[in-house]
Image (cartoon, rainbow, N blue to C red; front, side, top):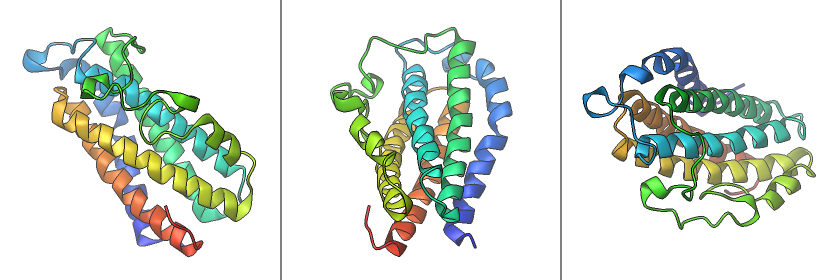
Amino acid sequence: MRTSAGWIASAAAAVLVAAGAITYAVAADDGGSGGSVPAADSADAGFARDMAVHHQQAVEMAYIVRDRTTDEEVRRLAYDIAQTQANQRGMLLGWLDLWGLPKVSSDAPMTWMGMGDMADGKDGALMPGMATDTELKKLGTLNGRRAEVFFLQLMTAHHKGGIHMAEGCVAQCTVGVEKRLAQGMVDAQKSEIALMADMLKARGAKA
């Protein structure tokens, strides 16, 4: 049976997924001051680009663990994360298209937050909280409880990095729907971190 924390996380995810079509449709008409399209170096564009990359790795980790365990609780969480973050990634990239802005930048990740030097990209970890290539490879070699614990630990760190970035958008972005999506990410991922802490404790491990 799903825990109450699990229901909260899934409910928050469902709301964000259901809002996808609406937020995508109105993003073009909800730009910054005066309805103007955000600049390529704005917080709005930077967040959209960076969070799309951050989300892609979360989806990848979720699909890896899905095939490494038969535990229904972990597989359900992985499914929720993959579906929610893939949907949000599509919205973020879609907004960049609507705004006529590039999906990649020559600037270092998180430059829009004034933190371009926070991650050096060593071993594939482009932003704080992201797993390294070595860690992803290790996850793909584990099975059962060991895979579950390592996934939960990696995803907890990943969510913490994502929350920090989303809070930056809440503070700095000017597009209303993007700020609301970012706040929704903060709320949902905090709930999932609490759920994952309980799941780790049940497996005799810590984040």
